[in-house]
Length: 402
Image (cartoon, rainbow, N blue to C red):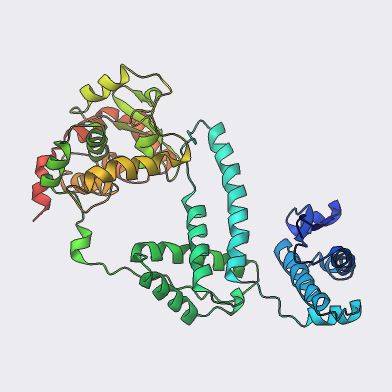
């Protein structure tokens, strides 16, 4: 068939709430071989919709309903192609005998759709609160999509309710055998565990088969910070990437936080931004050794311009800055990632903390609540914070390397 044919059924408004707001069903009829089959398929689906879907609106969700319709159509077309056209009664019996599996991929599809809607609403709310959402990217949504792609290749044809601990173990080793690192696998399994917990809460299942693997906590992994010799070699490059790297080291900011900084976000020699995890306001002083370089940049840009790498925009900005700029530089001199700049900053301040208030240090190194951060940073100790940040002497990192 050259022309695209679809069966479309609009859902009455009164039933849409029970189908997660679904406004219509749309099923492709491209499997039909001629106009007669298309006509009969439409008649069959209309009849099946009225007899089986409508009476179950209160019990089915949109995905289950669409799956039943598609299975019905596939079975019906199979009979048509074999010239054995069944009666509706016979067809109903056949379809009822088909086990309607809802796979873990189906569950993820629903989670992806729901997450995308919720995330967009969340972004709108953050934008109204004055948060820069231009470069925001939903890592959870990205994680769901990656898991789905892996599950498609893993190809376990099971209803999600039938997954066992052993199945999850097999999936774990499949991921590891196909190039996933243990940190990534842990993240995927945390997502899956949360999804299964939601299903338990919705009374769809009673058991969660997901056991999040644990990373072996080796002593040498606990000390993964940049060595001073590595920092020296990176800073010798003397370019925009090395300046951003140094700024990360001396501020403890996450990459997405520093990537969001515009000229308008810098005042009183301090960065003003929202914590990228919990979205409370933060103020982090610019280290005294950076002020001249930062001011030199500010003199030549507009208020809405980003401080670093202004050529990268939209929600791919952080990824581009990380992969196309910083990691190209860092990988020449170290095996560590960009995030280890924050680990280095936190490790330094925790080790050389004498003379500074514990809560002042935590306001720079930890995820304090919005109330705590507002009190300690804005109302009391910006000067104290400047003293803490300016106390950082990267050469002293050699004391942490023993």
